[in-house]
Length: 295
Image (tube, rainbow, N blue to C red):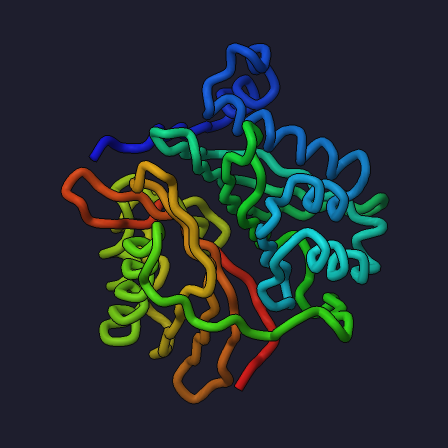
């Protein structure tokens, strides 16, 4: 199966692609994806993050907001973000370091740096991952997760936010291969530990921030999870999507991370997957943030 089109956008190249694109009629799917990302980021700076995200969201799109459960759909996302008082004074922008588009142009992904700035305070550097789906000729956000852009402890959950947890997703439908890969990934982490699992399931060009630094490739990512006290990792996908061409997909899930002798940490995540030339499915990038504790 042919590989998806991968763009790695370091430094000045990211800026030139993102801010110097050809006219829309001549754009490739990858350029159109970067243009959609630029539009969302500029709207976040101009009219606030909540309006920008909701405006870019697909009809069944989800946001993984720090300290909140997985929230699906523009209206529930708007309801959640409208309750966050700190957002009124916070300006959040982002720019990709990497991007991926399926060969049929139906699914894309971006990941990179995000900046949260408040007047009178030093900007805070974070990161983000986004999955995008082509709908009626436009790129729409299928899933978005921000890391380090907002304090989870400051999140306010409105009484009618929605369920605190989503039901596990069985491996069926167009995204079955990516769901199954996610479940196998989780089983390996439970059996052999996170270092083994994250190293084995990483694509050769996988990218992840670890310890605040960018890590690329299975070995570098594996080292991020080495050392420390024994920890039990368990997770499962609750949402997923795939390109029509079948080589690119994403999973959204819920995780419980329990250090030996310590309290459990409840989190949620977004993973971008790509089918390799030999048919195996490996992740390109992965990241998450906290969610409310659930039984």
